[in-house]
Length: 366
Image (cartoon, rainbow, N blue to C red):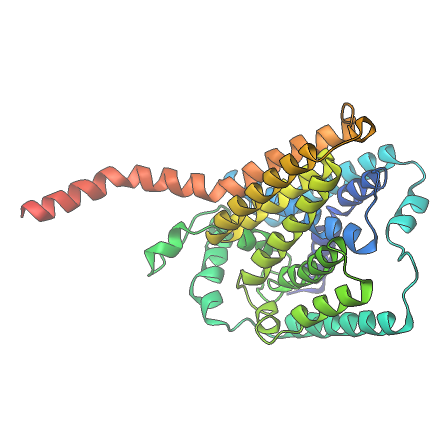
């Protein structure tokens, strides 16, 4: 590959990494106007979750249009970057102050909390270096995760390869769609595991946020996140295409955002909760069960919270435009990303059902 191609690949990789950032920051800045704004960890969680849903929508949309190419992805990421910049400036002209407030620890970290945070960041950098230079050799990744991505690269669409295990041909590939974008810049598979590192970070943030929301101290929350992120079953998956860590991260993020919605009744948190639920359903079939359980828990919790209100001043008036828009966009995104693969597989199976039934019945008659 010539130096010019390398430079184009680096530019495209930067666009993929930073393209959704302004839109995600606009969501974070909008959440600062809530009654109980999120802290550093919560805002970082929203930032990563927004990045995942935007990239999933881009990959699925271009795949349906048969335009999974470098040019189409580059133009789309540039358009998303420009749109996000416009939205971000309109949401809050005093951008620097709002962003610094959103990502500032409050109160300041104690010395031992700072040491725990530095240890986690060091582990993050170590995993980043390992993922960047170590090829993916995990069995499931080579059996069906990466062959699907290779087929998409060759066909510029979401065409599935012929996989020996027919079950995996009708499997939700939402996480692979996000990871596929990292295959495009250099036409190499060495960066495809980098999104798994983001899922690993999202998992730690979600565990910490749930712990804090349930009353744990900051030190206890950091300890819980550290133990989970350094678990022997978790670390090897960061350098592979396995979807267990992303699934757990989205489920935990949905749990945290659902708890926020139950307590505050904000449409913004409802929209983010639905986004996390949709992402969980898109990466694995078991995500459907977790999604259903989370929906039941949140609905029951919200009904209970409303019934427990005593004073009339606790009742909320009409929701602001930001909350309504966030709830609607979150619901649409969840339906699109979470239901895409199941609808596609159902249509494919129903199309093939008549010939299969005919062949089976003919064989039985014979």
